[in-house]
Length: 197
Image (cartoon, rainbow, N blue to C red; front, side):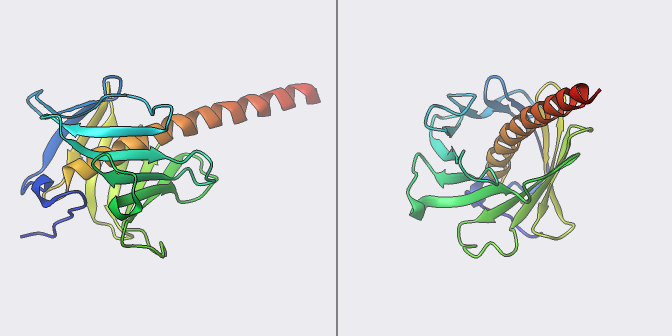
């Protein structure tokens, strides 16, 4: 058997590649046959900056919390509906504050307290609207995503697809926030250049 990358549960690690479609407007993840696999009740972060990911039976899988006040835009993911530190599964943050055409994110599992080396990393290429999820600092790809009428996801064999779905929902949220910041920065730059003439 190949390396298994289980973060949420080994039951979400299929021995074959999975194609999933995440409808970001509805907050629903579908399998290749169009059957719902996961959903969030609030497609956007709520007033408390949290979203709960449910399976198709209505069981809460994880809760995503966004921390607005951190410089690296950290999100934390907990088991079920918890926000107790003992239930932390993983956290995601930008690898650096200033990023241009490629948004890079580091993913740290709960047992990686030092955060010297990430457990997973995400490279989102803005101009191609695609991203790749790697295992740690290695060249091992565990999932890919293309934005094309939603998020088209390929999860590699033995990779926790619930983890990948939760991670890519965070990536999409951070991408939207990053795009807004870039638009504001461009607007300020153009306004400043216009005042120079």
